Length: 408
Image 1 (cartoon, one colour):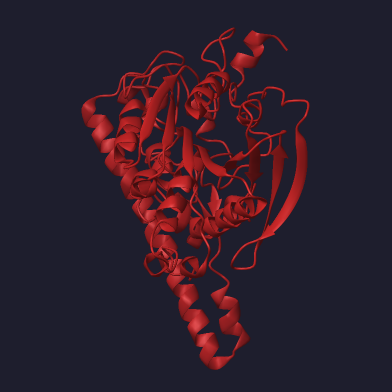
Image 2 (image 1 turned 180 degrees about the vertical axis):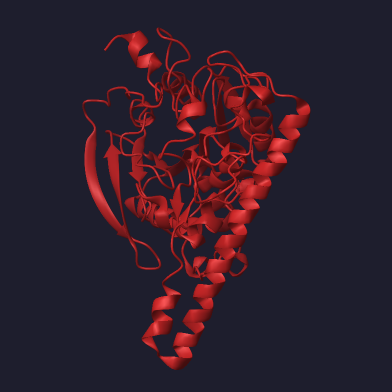
């Protein structure tokens, strides 16, 4: 397939081939048990003499072959990549439970005897790392006792080792905060993925949209109205999620008193929330809003006006509990800024200049919210580590160089 053909695909630039790992890398697989009894698995790669280990984890994606794995290994660090209990399927992803998953990984690495653990957060992994560190540095009695939906989570009883350092590569502001900026507020019927309010349609020329790849031009009035409508849509979904959670809790309470199987069935019948059209961040098509070096389009591809209507997207299917914990930009507690106060260790913050999930004003705000010592660098590249243009070094390669300098 020619380069031009690859670039024309809707999802071009999303997947990046990692560099080769050192030939003397040793790889072992491990299964861990979390404090609350769930099973999680990970891969430990070591190189001779490694006393430092980098811990890569994401709340919903598989980081086994992450682009930074060989970058750390080639600089003498071991690498631990781990998934959550819901890896690859975030239908039931509860961020508070993901903290227990991450705690199991940190405990394992301490037991392995490494001198230093570096927690690495890329994309949504960044907010997860910050959320973990915020809860880990609190006295156990002050940790969150439950989820936004009210489900108990035993963070206060869990061993939660702190990392010694942290690296953030293109960390977006958190699953919920990201979706809040990407959700399409022109949806008028949550059961109809094609329903559109023309006054809020981001892909209507009457509102400032231009034929791709020409950058659109939205008025300040439209942008403000659009963002208020995005928040209003998330609030409506929140209200529905909370209604379903409350109904399930009421049925569960009745079952404890009655023992009636009908009540037990109702307690499990919260259903699944479907959220259509979540590829509609105005910055994807109007490059004048929060400008950086990003190409036209979104992390889902070069034509958000098309991919917005597809079946693939953030937060598409979730339980009510998972929506409130992970994807709600209003109810979720897992946002980066909400938890940056816990990042008290020496930190490397790498901003990719062509990012389509983290924009310069957000990056600066996130850096300023970290109380620990922060090294903030900007390197050319896209969100997933691809090069800005063909023939240039990848963002992953340039990130590896910055990591090497920082480790020294």
